[in-house]
Length: 116
Image 1: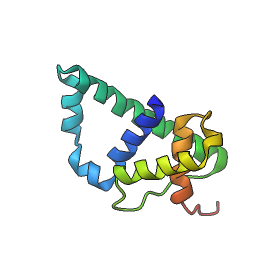
Image 2: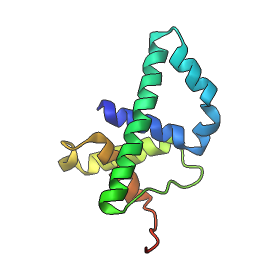
Image 3: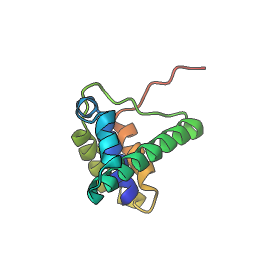
């Protein structure tokens, strides 16, 4: 569950809307602040970013698939897409949450791969 939340947080940070709202300065403040919730948010953001990069790279290597998020797609929309997929595929719930989130987004926004 923590990995799914971290992945969803990352997806929110990658959206066009969130890019302007959450800057490097914001991340620095989260990570260096004295409030424990801010440090937890910092750790979750970075862990989510790491998990998403790892998952995306693995899927690209293993299956030659990747996700192409459309311009203007928001983190809130990503949550809806992932939650819809999770509810429609309960047979997958024993798998890694990051992989499930990736599959959810890929099923909605697959990239067209150019032939090599």
